[in-house]
Image (cartoon, rainbow, N blue to C red):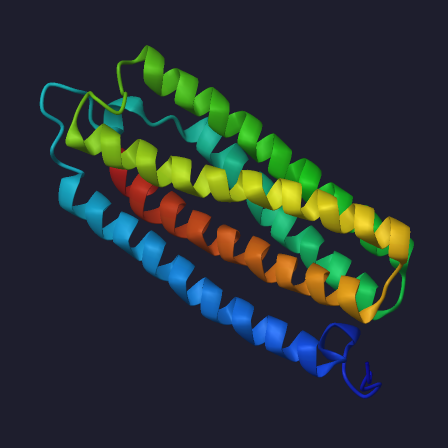
Length: 198
């Protein structure tokens, strides 16, 4: 395996470059998934039937906490990749661990939010609006959950094998995924919560 020293470690081999290109293509499919969910949401958001509207069920505090946690985690994953490129394995692992803890805290607040929705009568069966709302939020939450397990496996691999072109490549691809989830959350925050509270 020939490593190109002039490139960052995660791009160092031809296989690594193909992995990154392949992941960008995968993200294109993920964009289509969330675009479909958003299009469905905008179509159904006013179809509340006898159920509650967004203005009645959305609470600003949990949403702001979720946003703070996820955007901070985007910053810490950036710091992890920066530390990786400097060859500072311990710092990289530390920032990656903080990213995962922030993601876990985000999920905790989201679970609290889903319990709140259930208690106020906003379930999958209540109306078209609550069904698409919970589906959209749940799909994003499932992606965050997957990311937590993925990031944990990468941490374990770096601990065992150190920073190699393979572990650097996996870490970089994970960071792309995590940033993507943060971008999706900005759309959820802006076009579902803020718009729904107005």
